[in-house]
Length: 141
Image 1 (tube, rainbow, N blue to C red):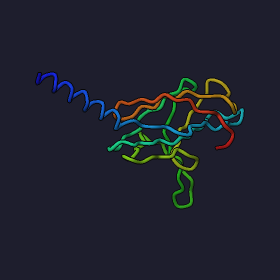
Image 2 (cartoon, rainbow, N blue to C red; image 1 turned 30 degrees about the vertical axis):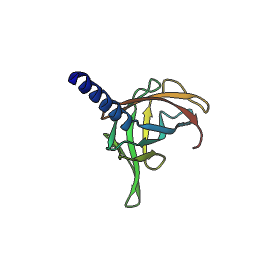
Image 3 (cartoon, rainbow, N blue to C red; image 1 turned 135 degrees about the vertical axis):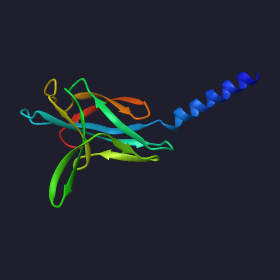
Image 4 (tube, rainbow, N blue to C red; image 1 turned 60 degrees about the horizontal axis):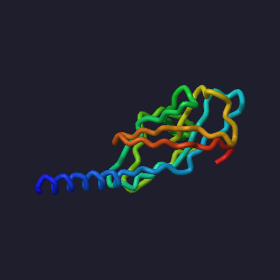
């Protein structure tokens, strides 16, 4: 009886932990690039309704050779883009990947992507959670 009760408590605890970490992705899109471009960018909003911070550590896509996390910012009047090892999403908060801020950079598309196409992504987080999604290719946000 005690083991059954303990098993039920552990199961309930696991379900609560899973429910607490349900990350969400909204408004995912890829900017259409000119035909001669060898680099594309993607944007989205990452939401973390959980009670602890989580970290986006990796993004993959079969449509590209690889995907990099980047951040654009203006420092002393000069625009810079820097590689990011990860992107932290605060507990009960969100991070918007948008032009002029955090974003995904994707070199060497497998084929020319135009408005109306869809791109598959797999996002991997520090807690082991993965999210699969499709992003629409658009000319503008």
